[in-house]
Each structure stands twice: as structure tokens, then as C-alpha cells.
Image 1 (cartoon, rainbow, N blue to C red):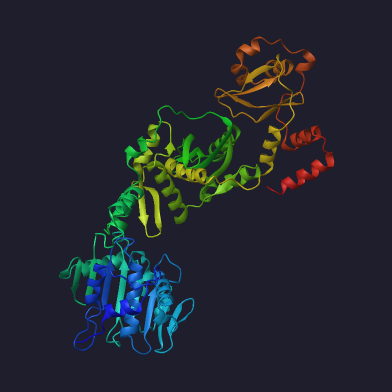
Image 2 (image 1 turned 90 degrees about the vertical axis):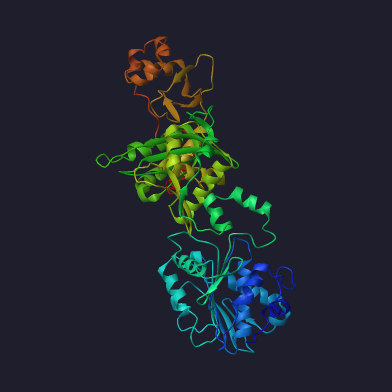
Length: 587
């Protein structure tokens, strides 16, 4: 039977918002339009279920907007209603609705006829409306649409979105009504609604290139580019910038499993520099730390990296392995290692998941350690995983050789979901905590996110760096701190503070001869300190009896040291006490 000339309507009435000119329909779109709005002898839609699926950047959203306006204005009659529903990943206003609004505003024959609000476009002369609704079945209850549109249906993964789609079934009260899907492929076993539509649609007879029709369904599903701008250069660019699974799904429009290897080991090996070794210390080196903690089963990993623009270098790492019968003592392991790292490097931020580390973080924050919560939400996991993948792929990560870390990389997989993707493990026994910690630390290093402000510990550290100490003279003694102990930032001996220095991988203090004798020849001298300085101790005279009875050397308390430093600078005691009181409020 006779029907409106759909293509003539589109080219004569609708305008492309990008150019202000009539739309230039693609061959695939023309082929789809030649069948989409066909009616039978009773004026009912022959294909009420429409699916148009093509690779990303094929103009699918604009085409959905064109189809919606065509169905509403040519076939809807008086009181026509169209519904654009958002998928689970969008806000209440669908992208298709935004595209419809832009087309109407750009089309001279429509813009003066329409009244546009945030979620509705209304044509008063025919009482026709196009509405945007959220992914909620209640919003579609009782509707009588001439066309309902679901854009990127691979994102319809929840029960609520499935109920919404069921509500939008073409109503029998309208002879001509359609339900339209524009999308690319989803994840096998997860995008279940779209997978059902795909299987039902492509099971019908083929009536044109990648075009299937039958049993009330018209389905266009192609794995090839359909637009002229999707040329070989663009395809090569997409292939080089995407993970293989993502390229297959988004660009080739193929169904993929949600799990795949995180990175190819050859990519990781290209980031390994045989000449690199873990750094022992560099108090001037800004580092960013990631902590992935586990109390009983998984390992706990602490990773320190440093960043230089988009490049990241592994500084050091440590892994602790608990067991069900011997849980990890967080205070003796994680907390002690973090404090150790803070004494060896200029730590800018320590990212951690608060799930297991709330108590540790509270204690460290009170000491001024720059702890930074990084909950393992979908968004955070996608950001950190994607960043680490890009660093490895672009060879912008430099790591030292470590076979255990390489094994963890080989055991890491990427799990992709409609809300993003994350690093995970294929088997429960696999240990990938070092990879997760590396991802957190690397993202912080790339973004150079430092903690705002600082606490008492940080004030103390900065004050120590600028403290007035005894200037180096020829007869000062070099004292090496034991390598198996965390070095303090300074020592106070006989009322004089000495700052730690890093030299050739060791922590050292330059002290006067008398103070070296107190450190190495006194009754309170540490055996480990003496063992680390055997030759120096051998060349020192024993302390006189009265000197040997002095109190042992100790680092001053934070408040004591700040008082000493501020007094040396000429500050009044009252003002220093006020400053200390304010600093306590930072904790």
C-alpha cells in the first residue's frame, strides 16, 4: 500500500545540526529505511522490532533521532507519543533525546513548531510529544508510544532496565508502532537482553548486506565500517589505542567475553630495565605509594613509584603473605613499612582501600602521613587499570627485574563490564595484589596528586630540614645507621640535632667526635649501631666515667623539637605553643 516518502521527509525537513544542511544518509541507513516503516494491508507495521547495530562512531545516535522524528511526525498522527529511554549508564536524559532536540533546533520547518523543556519536546499543532525517561519501568508504565528508542542496549544489564524494555513493547492499540534499538555489541553472558535480540534478529532471512528480516523483526548487524570517516587510518588508530577485546567489541561490533589477559607478557618485558634496582633511599625523591592489603588470604603489597610527566618508574616494593591461621599484623608490617618509606623518600601520597586499612590509616594520619583513600569502586578501578595498561603499552613504565612481579602480571586478567573494566585474577590462588597496588600508585604519580596541607609529622619533617645544626667541620665523624633498621630523620645527642643523610644507599649522620663517643662508646650504645661502625668505634677513646652516666641519646618528641627549632629562630615560646596547639587540630 502507499506510504509516506520517508527519505524525502528526512532530506527536505530535517537538518544536520553540525552543518545546517540536509542530512546525507549513508547507504546502510537508506537500505534500512527502505524497510523499517513498511506497513501491511491493514496499515500495521510489518517490522515493529527494529535493531540497527554498527561500529562505534557510525552515526547511530543521530540515525536513531532521525527515525524517532520520522515515526512521530509521519506516522503518529494526533497525540503521538515517543519515548527515549536511557540505559543503565546514562542520566535521565537520553543521548538520543539530546540529538532530537539539536535536529529540531537546526530545522527551520520544525523549530518554531516545537516547545522544548529539559525532558520533553512538544509539537502543539498535533499534540505530539517526545519524552526522555530514566532507566526505570515506572516511568514507562501506561505509555502508548508510536516509537520507543533504546540507545546502546548493551548497557541494559539490570533487572530494572529489563522491566523497562518490557514496558516499552509496541502497543496493540496503535497499528503503526515500533521499538527501536541502536547499539554496538555487548558482553556474552552479561548483556543478556541485547544478546537475545541479536540471536533472534540474525536468525531471520538475509534480505540485503548484513540486513535480516522476518517474524516482525528488521535487524541490521554489521562488523564493517559504514561511514566514510571510518577509514583505514582511523581503524589503525583505534586498534593501537584500544585493548584487543575493546577493539573487537566496539570497532568490529563483535560479541566478546568479559575476561581477557590484562597485558601480553611481551609488553611487560619491554618495560623491564635490567639495569634498574630497587632504590634504598633518596630523601629528595617524590614518591607515590599504593597499598593493597589483605588480612588472611591474599598477599599484601606495598608499591612505591615516582613520576616524571606521563612516565612512571618503580622505586621499591614489598609483599607480605598472611595465612588463615597466621593473619597479618598490620601494625608490624604495613604500618612499619610505610613509616620506613616516609623516612627514606619524599612521600607525596599513599593510596589505599579503606576496607581493610581504616585503623592503620587513622594512626598514620595522626602522625601526618599523607594517606589518601582510594575505594575500589568501578570508576576508580577502571581509571587505575586503564592508566596502568596505557603505561605498559606505551612503554612509559620502567621497572626493575622481578620474577614474582612478572608472574603476578601474567596471572592478572581484565574483566570488562558495562560500567568499565578492572584488573582481577582468574583463579583464587593467583596473587595479583602487587599489580593492583602498582595501578593505584602509578595513577597517583601520573596525576601528581599530593595531599593538601600537612599534619604534625609533616611539619616536624619540614622543620627538621631547615633546622640550624652544627656545621660540618674537618673532625666530624661519619656514623652509619644499621641497614636493617629504619633510620630516624634526625638524632639529638647532647642537645644537638643531627639530620640524616643518604649516601651510596646508606643512611649516615655526621656528628662531632664527642657525640660519636656517646653514640658508640657509651653504656647505652646500640650493639647494632656499633656493629655498623666497627672501625669508627675502634678509633674512639672511651667516655670518661661522668660522661658515661649521661642519659642515652634519643630523638626528641615532636613538640620538644619544634620548640627548639623555633627558639633558635627567635620565636617567642608563647607563639610556638599557640602554633603547636593549632597543629594538633590538623590531626
